[in-house]
Image (cartoon, rainbow, N blue to C red; front, side, top):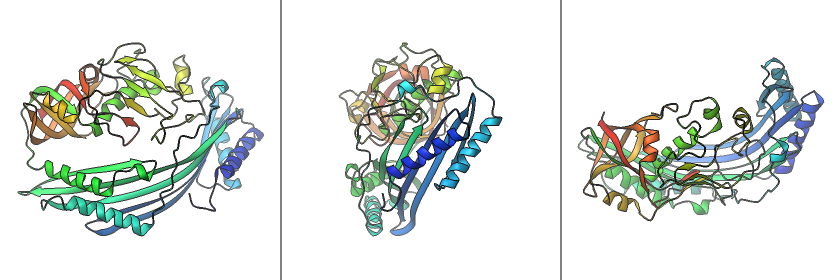
Length: 444
């Protein structure tokens, strides 16, 4: 965070003033969030600087309640006048919204009291010139993999820091600094007028946890090269391995289905699933909000509710839902501390790596890329465009493209055979590659 800018104490004063002003003009309850962030992003393409972005972002948002009516407003100006104007705007909006008896803050007794430091902030002391050099090195490593790597979509380096405060009229106030740094590269391989692209990236709270620019570049180039000579395949029913970077999508589908909004709207394929076995015994998912340096670590959720470590899915059985205070009230339950989403989902894995999983397959598919959004959340029907590699007799034989994989998510979850130990650590869902017993595979 740059010096002479906003610090936590200044943001606390702004939040406190907003809450007092909301009470002064007649709000029965209110909550505010104030944030400040800085960032820089560099991208190069074919050895030349393409973009250089430096940003400073300020934000203020308020939700207040006038009895059973709710109004919200926001501003990017943190001056006292703008804060008061935003609060007044939210109050005026509340006058015209439909009343809802479930509107209101989360229960006061659920507010977080333990404010442990989860090590979510680290300054990456790197100059713009150094970031440009790092990006160039990353791209050069990718291009040097083979003469068949003929073009590039670029390499990028980004670094951002921010601080925020959340406060509400229960007297809760909490906030902390955060950071996020990343390296990425995407290149194109060409052979016989056929082109394939692939990429790799690394992101972390602390720059020291990033993969090296050399590693990211080389892997991006290697992955693009491996996709040359892709073929179509005949329609069949066969085992499918979801490579770790995209296996998190299966976990996301499950999480969406047990999230409060979809549950109370009756738009989930896992309605009334609490305590039910909905997936293979191979699937166990822990939610760990207290993971040091975790992408989604937090001592409290977006409403100030304390977070808790828990076994969300235990050997295929749903142990809990993900609920905000509103969705919890709609379902006659209590907030699970998930306003804003899940906190670091850790999928339990076995002892096999990706190569071991591949060896178990007579004929099947390794999926490394998915296209489109093909999940019907109500029925669970799943259909996605895909690309990857065809497997025969436990070996990768050739790359494949322009195919579609399909099934029903209820069955897909039950047919998980194994989860690899090649855990992908970018993002808030940590899982290895997932092997599904069988899915429909069609040439598109």
